[in-house]
Image (tube, rainbow, N blue to C red; front, side):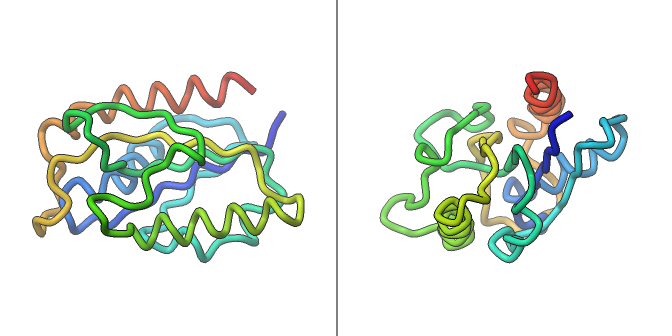
Amino acid sequence: MRNILILCTGHHYYCDRGFGFHIAKALERVRLPESVEVMEVGESASEVPHIIEGKDKMIVVDVFQTKDEPGTILRLKPEEVPVTVDGVTDVAKYHLMEVLQQTSLIGKCPETIFIGVTPKDIESLSEQLTPEVKSKVPEVIDLILQEIKIN
């Protein structure tokens, strides 16, 4: 059985930016194989290279600012992840991508995919997701479970 890390990122006090946090909480209620570890890391995903090393696969859960409608579910390869949006760099994603590149250079980067949604609101102070994004939590959980079964 492959060693899988589900890395849930985001800031749960900024509305839809907390999507990863809500997914991590939902995954706590799911019986996962022992070889699957779930970590909720806020916006500190770039500080976990020692945890990434040694994993066979990593699923990063986050929001992705694309031109898609809010609530659109996305499954992206690392090279498809939008790091700059409207000329502004998403610093947390940029640093995570740097960590992935560095661990790749030393041959210790796991197969990595990104799963998440297009947010509606990432600026309002709220612990609640917008309805468009909240309604996608069950589908994203299913997509993650499918991803684990592929292994």
